[in-house]
Image (cartoon, rainbow, N blue to C red; front, side, top):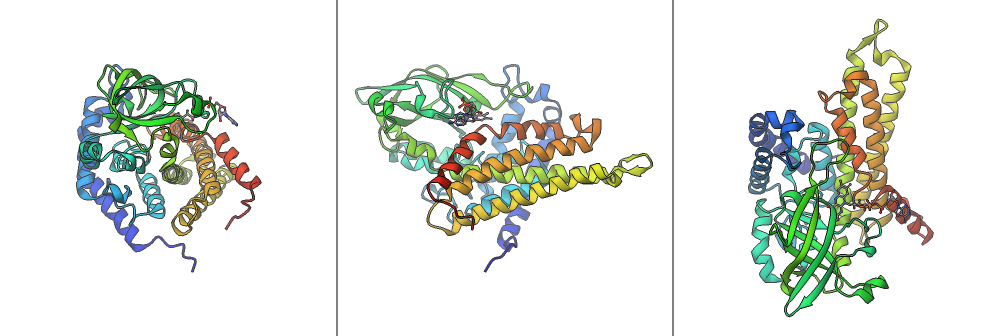
Length: 414
Ligand SMILES: Cc1cc2nc3c(=O)[nH]c(=O)nc-3n(C[C@H](O)[C@H](O)[C@H](O)COP(=O)(O)OP(=O)(O)OC[C@H]3O[C@@H](n4cnc5c(N)ncnc54)[C@H](O)[C@@H]3O)c2cc1C
C-alpha cells in the first residue's frame, strides 16, 4: 500500500527533539547570543569557531547522545540505532528540523554532520578491535569529532589522482601529504586519511589506496589552516598536513590497499541528509517569503497581489514539491529494496542542492532589500545553499553517475 503520511513514531521523535531544543539549546543560544548574531565573534582570529561556540556544540552533542538522538542513525554494529531509524527517518527528521529552525549551527549539532564522515559511521566498522575500544566511546558520547580526509589540492572529483603516500616502516606506516576542504578538521580529534599504499595498483586504479585513522597531534598531523568560503570570516573546513605522521598498522581502517570501498560506505546516507536539509531549508525560506508577501505593501496592495511575486512563490512550491517527493521515494527505495538505488541517490543530491539555491534566491528577491540583509538570515542560507553543490560529489559528477546508470540499462523510475 502506498502511504504518504509521516509515521506516528517519527512525529513523536520530531516532537521530542523540539522539546530538547527548547530545553537544552535555547539557553545556550542566549548564552552565545553575541557570537551567533555577529560573525566577527563567531570565529576566532584564525577563522576557527570561537571557544564559546565550540563549547556549546560539544555540550549539545553530548546531551543529544545522552538523550538518545546523536546515535539514532548510527551503525547498529557500532552501537547506533540505524537498524530502527532508516533512510526514511533520516530524511523526515532532518527535513523537519531544517524547516523549523533553518540553518541553526547549534541545532545542527544534534546529529553528527552528514552522518558518514563523523559519528558512528559505517566507515568505522573496519577499525581494529583495540582501536574501536580506544575511539568509539568518545565518538558515541559526542565528545570526539572525526573528519574525513579524502580530497586534496589536486584530487577532488578525481580522487585517484591523490598524492598523499603512506610508506611501511616495521609495524608502522609513515604518511606524508596534504588534504584540503576537510569538514570539521579545525576541531576534530582524529582524521580518516586516505593514502596511496601501493603505487602500481593505484596507477591502474585497481586499489592501492588505504584508509588510516590518524590522531591530530598538531605537528605530524595538523590542521594548518581554515578555508573561509563565500565571504565568511572563517569556516569549518580546513587543510590537513601530514608530515611524517607515524601510525601503527592497527590504525588501518578496513583492508590494506582497499580504502575506497570504505570511503564510499555511508556516502549514500550522507546524500540523503544533504537532500533533506535542502528540502527543509527551502521550505523555511518559502515560509518567510509567503509571510512577507502577505504583509509588505507596494502600490496600495500587499505584494502577494502582484502576479510577478505569485509566479516566484509558485515556482518555489513546484521546486520543493518535486524535490521532496524525489527524496522520500529514494529513501523508501533504500529502505525497501535490496539494491542501493544509485541513480536516484545521485538524482536527489544533484536536484535538491540546485533546487534550494533557486528557491532561496527567489525568496530573497521577494524580500527586496531586506532579503540581502543579515537580519533575516536568508543570505546566510543562500550562501550555504550555494556551497552544497560541490561536496559529496559535484552536480556534474552526480549527472555523470545518472547517465552511466541509464546507459547501463537502469530505466526504472518507480
Ligand atoms: C563545503 C565543502 C565541504 C567539503 N568537505 C569535504 C570533506 O569533509 N572531506 C573531503 O575529502 N572533501 C571534502 N570536500 C571536497 C569536495 O569533495 C571536492 O571539492 C569536490 O569533490 C570537487 O572537487 P574539486 O573541488 O577539486 O573540483 P574538481 O574536481 O577540480 O572539479 C572542477 C569542476 O569540474 C567538474 N568536473 C570534474 N570532473 C568532471 C567530469 N568527469 N565530468 C564533468 N565535470 C567534471 C566539476 O563538477 C567542477 O565543476 C568539501 C568541499 C566543500 C566545498
